Image 1 (tube, rainbow, N blue to C red):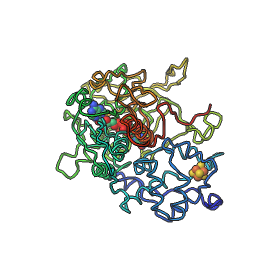
Image 2 (tube, rainbow, N blue to C red):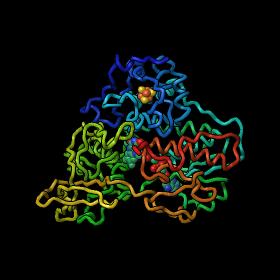
Image 3 (tube, helix red, strand yellow):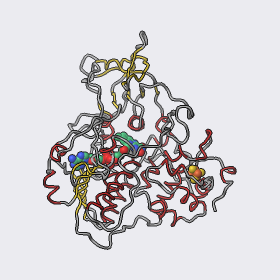
Image 4 (cartoon, helix red, strand yellow):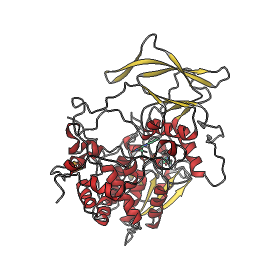
Length: 501
Ligand SMILES: Cc1cc2nc3c(=O)[nH]c(=O)nc-3n(C[C@H](O)[C@H](O)[C@H](O)COP(=O)(O)OP(=O)(O)OC[C@H]3O[C@@H](n4cnc5c(N)ncnc54)[C@H](O)[C@@H]3O)c2cc1C
Ligand code: SF4
């Protein structure tokens, strides 16, 4: 029986982040472990609600009250089991998820402080590693059927693990040199150190999953070959088509880049540290894209922009501005607009924001300004209002509000336009929809024997959704192949986040 008064005795507390002056000199994770005493105290705040809304907020259906109580009582082995029953990779979500479960926690009602669900999750995940809980769990029998998974992000990895554990032979094809998708070269080490990804790849390998990296499916291997070699194909190619702004004057200047170009280059440098390769971030063609000593302007307000901010500080930027088209959100939930337990529109400050830089809201770039040599020297911005008219976004600049911000490096972090247009799609006869995503039927098939999951299906989203979709699509593949029993399917293709009706 959980402690019914825990939340009355204890306030919400998180471990202190590593001090800013220390952490911006390295690439290690920002959060240290919470420690057993703190995390058991925090788990004690959970009321084990009769209707646990935290559970509904999580696309994976994580059994949150169960493992909160197991942590409270120090029953770590059972907590590890309970958490892994619904989530293949809790060390990823525990570190990276924005935690819709916490927004839906009953303790958050009326502006109160929800349970630190995400921190409990990460502590259980780390306990699993400490207790060797990540040992492989290979299938006892083989089904003799084989599945190709294209893409090794969280959706592809989750699907591969589910299918391999069900006895299917799984090959994961990945275009990059190393598996992991955005977890590998998109998300910086200060949010997720890569040994977490390596450990899972080793676990999957020990469970029989084979990885073929450096293989661009549709180019190096055709879809026809893939279909001939496998009984089913699962696409998990992500939504990596970065949104651009070609109409803005000066977009072609040197120094104006897609944010992902900068992040991938920087993360590759960190990955290469120690093997003698140059420590300067460069594009594939050798062009430097390092922020050291530069005035950096980041355009956009989401995860990608915050990651660019943290990278720029660690590279030694002279100064950073982060520009957002929209006005500054309120600090607290506006219950009329986003009633509990839905995801609220509030000001989200990432650890990167306490490391420096200036956030500027309600502005739009009018021009990237040339220094006379074809290199950007500033961005000219105007204050704007944004309204939705008939579903279309209308941005209006306020006359006389224009000003320049110095810029040697401009990073466009203005979102993604779905999965990339690539030969694989035409070869399979599937097309991007109006959002740039690939539609699936109720059984996750995009076309006969070809399934789709993760950002490629949903559009740019979250790791927790990618894992949930990977698990659900794997269950559909298992059924398609005539596998015995059913695999867990936490979501269907039409599932949306909690919303007020
Ligand atoms: C910078 C950044 C930061 C983020 N931070 C967070 C965060 O903090 N928390 C959070 O929850 N979410 C975050 N996200 C979102 C999250 O990373 C994605 O939602 C998630 O990774 C999607 O997983 P996926 O498996 O669908 O695709 P991806 O992770 O994008 O993986 C797709 C993989 O498919 C491969 N591929 C594509 N085409 C082919 C082909 N033809 N052949 C072979 N391989 C191919 C790609 O190389 C890639 O490795 C972030 C996203 C970005 C860009
Ligand atoms: S909603 Fe909050 S308090 Fe209730 S069971 Fe979930 S985590 Fe515990």
